[in-house]
Image 1 (cartoon, rainbow, N blue to C red):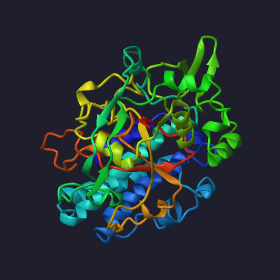
Image 2: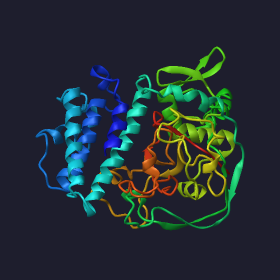
Image 3: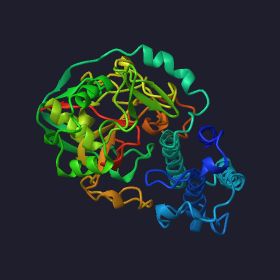
Length: 417
C-alpha cells in the first residue's frame, strides 16, 4: 500500500492548480478528480465493503464514483482543493494500513485490498499517459533514463511458428492469486498453426507505410476505419511530425528523432489493421497472442524503469518459449479480438470492471507497456512480500480500450496471413 502510493504521488509531484485539472477531454480525467477517485475506490471496497465502516467524507460518492458520475461533468464538480484531496487519500490509506496491521483485513477481505492496489496501479499508468496527452513534462528522472535505451536499439525481424493444437488460455483457479473476472477461467482453445512476429512493428516499418501514402489509400481502411480517419484528419500517428531530418515523435513535452527500431506507439486498431492490409499481414487473435507468449518472463521493460519504450531487440532473456520477444512490457499490443466474456463468466462484486464493456466496441490488448507496474503481471500474491517475486506467470491479464483510442501506450505485432 505504502510503496504503491509513493510511486503514484511521484507521477503528480510537480503538478498543482490548473495542471491538476487540465482541459476537458474525452480521453483523460481531471487529475485532481482521478486521485480522489483512486482513494474513494480503496475506501469503497476495503473500508466500507470489507469492514463495514462509514464514509470518510459525506460527499465522497457524489464526487468520486466513476460509475455514477458522467465523464464530461467531472471538471464541473465542486471538488476539494489539491491539498484536501491528497489529505483524503492519505487518510484512506492510513486506515487501511492500520486495518492490515491489526489483521482486521484478512481472509476474503484481502481480495478487496488487492483489488484497490491493482486499480491504483492502473490509474498510475493513466496518470502517465495523461501527462503525454496534455504535453506536460515527464515525471522527474524519466528523460535521464532514455538515451541508453534508445541508442542501443537494433532490429529483430522474422516470425516464429506455433504448431496447431489444443491450448489452454485464461487464469487457472488459485487461492493465492487475484485475477479480474474477465480472466476467469482457464479453458481450452483449438488453434491452427500460425506464424507470429518475433517483435512488435517498429517506427521504421510503420514509417514505410505512412510514406507509401498508406493513410490516404482507401483500400487499406474498412468503412469504420475510413470514417474515423477522415473525422480525425489522420495522416500519420498522432504524436509524429515531419522534421528537418525526417519523422520525429513527441515524448511528453519534447520532440525526438523517430528511432526506427523502437516499437510504434500511440496507434489505434484502425491504424494497426490498415498497416496489416498494406503489409499483407494480420493482427493475432487474443488466443494466438496468449499462446505465443507462453513462457515469457522477466526481465522486461516495465515499471517506468527506462522512462519510455526501448528497442525491439532488447530483453531477449525474457523471450517466450516460441521465441517471441517483449510479450511483457514495452508496448501494449492490440489483438483482433473484441472484449467478450470467457465461457462460464460470472461477474465479480466490482461489477463495472468488465461487463459494461462487452459491447463489441472494445478490443483486447495484451502484455503491458513500459509504464505498467510489474506487480500487475506477477503471479504470487502482492502481500507475500517475503517471497521472491518474478514477472512472467500472469499472461492472462486482459486490457481493453475502444478501437479508436491512440493516446494509450499501445502498439501491435502481426501474424502471417
